[in-house]
Length: 221
Image (cartoon, rainbow, N blue to C red; front, side, top):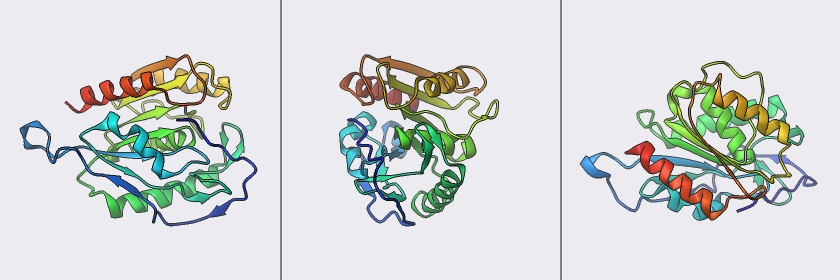
C-alpha cells in the first residue's frame, strides 16, 4: 500500500463523511463476552477510505470504520493541507479536527474508546487527534507518518499504547520529520511505544501488516 499523493490537485473542502466504509467484525464478541474493539482507519493523501480493505485483516475481529478525508483532491482525498511536505497548515488541521470529532460523536458512542490507525497524512492526523483527545481513544498505530503542529506537550500520550512503523527508505516524508517524531515518542510523550523500521519506501508491506496484527492482538487481549 503506497501513498497516491497528488500535490497538483485542486482542493475543495467538504464537510461530510458520506463515503465511510465499515467492515463488520469477524466475530460478534471476543472471549469473555466483551464487545469487539473498534478501529478507525485514516487513509493517506490522494487515497480513499476503500484502502481499509488491505489493512483490515490486521485488526480482526475488530469493527473497522474508515471515513474519507474531508478535503477533496483531483485524485482522492486528504485530511488537511500542507504548507510544505511534512509541514501542516495549522488552521487546516484544526478545521479537520473539529469536523472529525463531530463525526465521531455521531458515529461512535462516547462509552466506546476506539483505536486509531492512520497512514501518511492520515497517520499524522491520527497522532494529532490522540494528543488532543487522549481520553477519547484507546491508542493508535501511526504508519509512515510525521507528527504535526509542534511543539508537542510532554506526557500528552502517557501510557497510551502506540505502534509507530515506517520504511527506512521513505523519500516522501523528510527524514528530519521522522527523527523529530521518533525522538518525542520515545521520550517526552510518555507513550507505551512499539517502533519498527522496514527496508522499504513510503508504503505498508506484508511484514509491517504482520507486526501490526501481533501488536494489536496483544494490545486488546
